[in-house]
Amino acid sequence: MFGLTALELARIQFGFTVSFHIIFPAITIGLGSYLAVLEGLWLWTKQTVYKDLYFFWVKVFAVNFAMGVVSGLVMAYQFGTNWSYYSAFAGSITGPLLAYEVLTAFFLEAGFLGVMLFGWNRVGPGLHFLSTLMVALGTLISATWILASNSWMQTPQGFEVVDGVVVPVNWFSVIFNPSFPYRLVHMTLAAYLTTALLVSASAAWHLLRGDDNDRLRTMLSMAMWMILAVAPIQIFVGDLHGLNTLKYQPAKIAAIEAHWENKPGQGVPLVLFGWPDMAAEATHYAVEIPNLGSFILTREWNGQFPALKEFAPEDRPNSTVVFWSFRVMVGLGLLMLLLALWALWLRWRGRLYDTRAFLHLATWMGPAGLVAILAGWFTTEIGRQPWIVYGAMRTKDAVSNHSTLTMSITLGVFVVVYVFVFGIGTRYMLKLIGKGPDNNEEVPPEKDSQPHRRPARPLSAAPDDVDAQPSTS
Image (tube, rainbow, N blue to C red; front, side, top):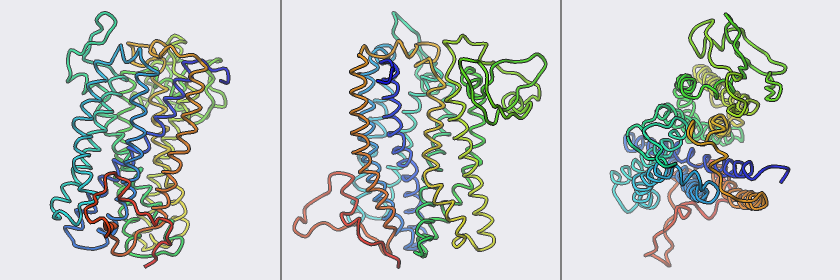
């Protein structure tokens, strides 16, 4: 297919499926915590606006949760089908970590999800709030195990290779490997920012249509406070993560910065824009700020760090890709901060809910968190190449022995099925958001003809009348 090898097709296929999957858990993490906050505020203040927002967003959560579970199952199978040599090599690490996620996070979510979605009128307020908290906690525990597994692949620790197979010798070092704390915090904050942007975009879109009410104003206000609080912390954590990456994956940093060589006695510029050329070992049309790269990464004006030419050509990540994916992530992060600062200014002037230019920007920024997550994920994963386990196993040695034809067919099938299935699910979720929260909204009651019926799947929590006209009360 298009002159690509079976290895390249396997990487594209995994990248395609993980790109779909990572979107849904990110929203699940953010919405889970948001729902816990909404229910807690309702219990504390008894203001119905928080209850209305809870019932509105729990429907979106249910649909998103279902799509996240389905997309995650496909990824798990790919380790055995497309990356069997990796599974044989590092299965003693990856297998237990994924099993721990199931035994802790998934069981916790499964145990309390039904009460959260369908138990509002069947259990007391305290037990229902506990269920919401447990589901939110489950999403965070799930992220913890998944990122522990992936971080180990980035900065592997606590193992030995015996007879060509990884043997864990220190599980504490395996789980709490050097990049794990930074990546866990960075990803969790990214999920919160993503959710806040989706919530604010929904509120802004309805306000632009003239559907002004206290529920929409509360959504927008809470989201902007969240972005204002989290965006600066995310920038700080991102800087710490970059320093950690420089220590353990210097080739990745060199590729991100398009830093080809050090010049004696000179600092490293920050390349704002340009086109890194892997073949020419140069960056064309570079727009630079002298010495700023040195200051950011070494805290010294003339400090130097490893350059790409110091690594063998076969050990260099693709600078052309990670250079731009990193800048997309950082650029969107700065836009999020500017959006929150603008909101703070408008709030002070009493114009937060009726400044149309701001509302338009908030609407357009709705998917910015998801795009930033994907850009950051591409930076992380492509920047790790050519290693699947950094320094221990190359990606080309991990792929299964499938033909180019087989990988081409399966990739095509994945694209068609994913676009169809998740396209329908995403469209339905957007319709739910587009309907907007109603006054005194409730979970749909059980059908009178089946008084004993209990919904058995998350999607049962979503309404059947999603195409009904939104309420403007």
